[in-house]
Picture (cartoon, rainbow, N blue to C red):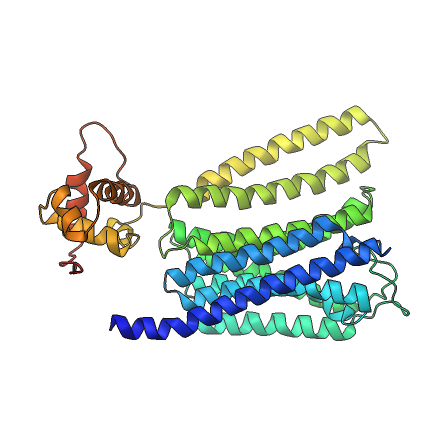
Length: 412
């Protein structure tokens, strides 16, 4: 059986390696093309090295995280990660093509939505939602991107790429409707995941990953406010969005990667706090811009005080929301046991049989120090913190026995 599994895994491993190499190669080529164009005089926000490197780094980083899912034998989850990596890298590549040849500009103009759709499809898969949820949402995203690519028309002749929301592109009510529907759909997905969540770290991490796409759309909209009345330079805002898109997709991939299928409580809290904090920062930035624009002509002091009060109020709200969402219900011990690796299960099984550390090391062909390291990780995953009056070995053995685990086969 083990030999058969290895034979089946070999083609998959080769395919995954090939895809990752292609993604990295495309990212490098696209960055090289954009930087070359900038040196040649194409002064566009897409040729700005910060935005280009951010997209390339995110694509490569997500491809690396995909390996974690394959290592956990989650092939479908791994392929979703690679699809997200490819979507981010394709956005970079389309920008390079549009900048240097003016081809595929319409597709580039709407491709920002593709990584967001893939993130939420990956979250729906990780949450084990009904299959038709993914079909409906995926079809909606595909239709929106396809129609947007056909309808979008850049100026002719096309010279470079204007900053975000360029006046030179003819507006279309259809595109406005598509963006609105896409945003509404991206909001519905995390809401549904939160509603059906059992508040375990795993469920909350999945919901957090799905909450990042609507945040990125809000950031995109907020750039228009930053431009007017915020008076922020358009190129700065556009580069900022590329960085935000890259970072958001990378964090979403990290959230989904750390679902093992049971996430660590401490890690879940940190990532949930990060996602909620990102919403808080964006809210402060948008409201502060509007308050400053409205109150500054009347009184700069009033404007400053209003912004400070706003920041304090949002910070307090962030603290309360994180405390509510990031304190999940107690994870059952039997569920925690599934977090243990095969080797850790072998160590705990021998410990439950009363075998001493030295004999465990001999049976598993390990050093005693390695056995101690395995035990420390076992205690951590089971939530057994060191404290007076608690024998963590006894508690771990009791959890193993009460969960009804049978004997674990030890390799000969």
